[in-house]
Image (tube, rainbow, N blue to C red; front, side, top):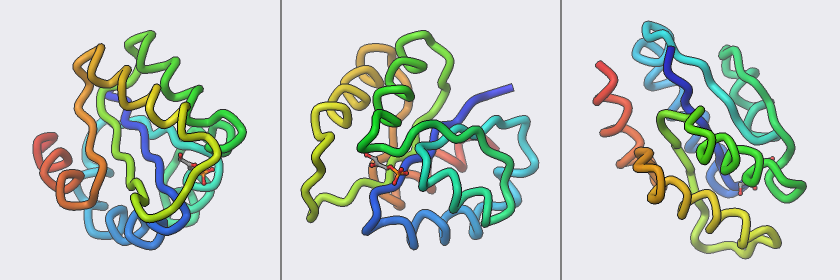
Length: 122
Ligand SMILES: O=C(CO)COP(=O)(O)O
């Protein structure tokens, strides 16, 4: 069972939902556990997926996912980042991305890379 973390900034949530809809076959056919930050998780659920929801990003959700990465409990991170917006929890976001590099966890930060990573599961 692989665990995939999904996170999307507000400006990128529509693209995240589109991604989930487009890749339903792959995401449903694999033994995957999905974890997500709070609001992203609610939208993922609404798209028909089972998901473990953590705190909302600004309240510590990115930090929770970062901790799981450090504990080697996450196999892939799909992070739909909005580079055109400011985020009060920027330090948490950098921590999450840094820990992906520390622990060699595949990290997609835009839809094009996310598609390539997900195809790697096939
Ligand atoms: O802020 C986020 C990622 O940095 C996402 O948090 P939400 O999924 O709660 O909107």
